[in-house]
Image 1: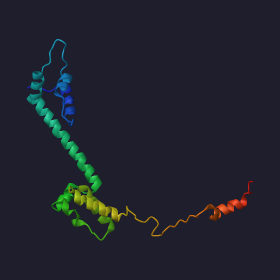
Image 2 (image 1 turned 90 degrees about the horizontal axis):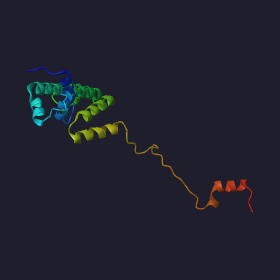
Image 3 (image 1 turned 30 degrees about the horizontal axis):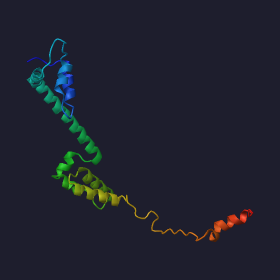
Image 4 (image 1 turned 60 degrees about the vertical axis):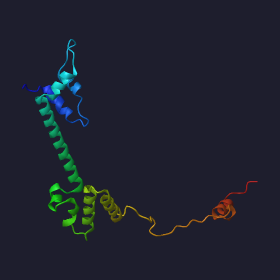
Amino acid sequence: MSQLSELEKIALSWAATLEAGPDWWKLYEVTHPVRKSEILTAGVVSAWKRSARIANYFEEQKRNFSARVDAIRQEERERITGATEQETSETGNNNEIGAKFDFSDRGQLLQYLNRVANTSKDEKRRFEALKLLADLQQFKKDDPNGGEIQRFYTPLACQDCPLYLKQKEKTPAAV
């Protein structure tokens, strides 16, 4: 079995990151420049793709890429929720995240609800946690004036309005 060229390694590493999968024909063309006198067939590309050295290296790169993506996602999840996977698995499952919290403390209750909202896969439970968060943080305030009712009165005609009468007194009548 021959070794992979540097160009093949680079191309396969890049192809492993593609979500839709690689275009094997183009990969072969990039890694094996074809002379004008040669005819490239699907059989040649297929044989190259199925060769053990190519298939093994491609699968290894794909696993490595998936592991890196999973690690990045886990770090991001931990940064957002503040809980490591080990902390959530200590209690047995994610539904028992609140085993260590004192729910009489508002801050800890908010932290617990954030964790539930970020880690819950059940949409109904997630929605309930978000609704409670909004209520606790007073995102929806029904009364912006603190219960005070504002009343606006409009005169029936301009002749009754005090502003109109003052202005009329200040300016001489134009006749």
